[in-house]
Image 1 (tube, rainbow, N blue to C red):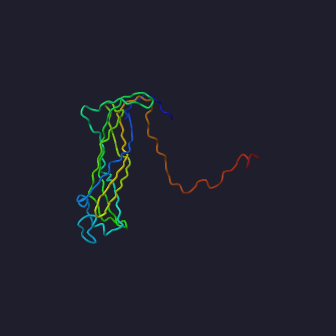
Image 2 (tube, helix red, strand yellow):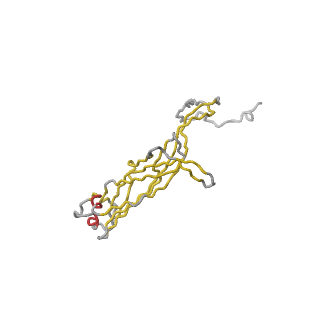
Image 3 (cartoon, one colour):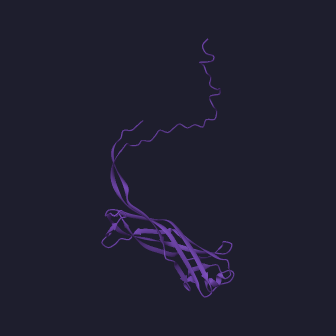
Length: 222
């Protein structure tokens, strides 16, 4: 049964602008004595004075970096006087007025050091990373900026040469930024109603035990 349509007013979030940016953070580095203080390691086979002295007992060690997902945080950085307007030239020769928006993205990561069998022998304290990115968006007054980190890659490298000991961490992630505001729209629609539930039965025995006949042919009319 078709339902009668009529005009209704609904409130929905409208997307005014949406961009995704790949962010390559500057390399995060640690050297002695900060390097050794950063890690907690097992004290087997022997206690060590510093990290690289300890790792000399594991010649085939490796490191891996992991981002702590629960620590990820993003928000708009509010500017004194609000978002400033900027004239931007488009590729087709037209000019448009956009708003300057700043977004903070930060979080924590940890570095594990593994022996040749893949066992964790050292783990770093949580390491903070943060960046403020500037965007030029269609973000007029009354809109809200929502952002989130959608994807990321983290890599770490520990260098122990005896004269130069250092940990380098590289981090790349994608920052999605949406500009939204609730708007009211008039649309033609009909109210939905719940459907009736269908009767369900677990039928095992078939009631039609014989194949269908052709009564017009046989036995027919004699």
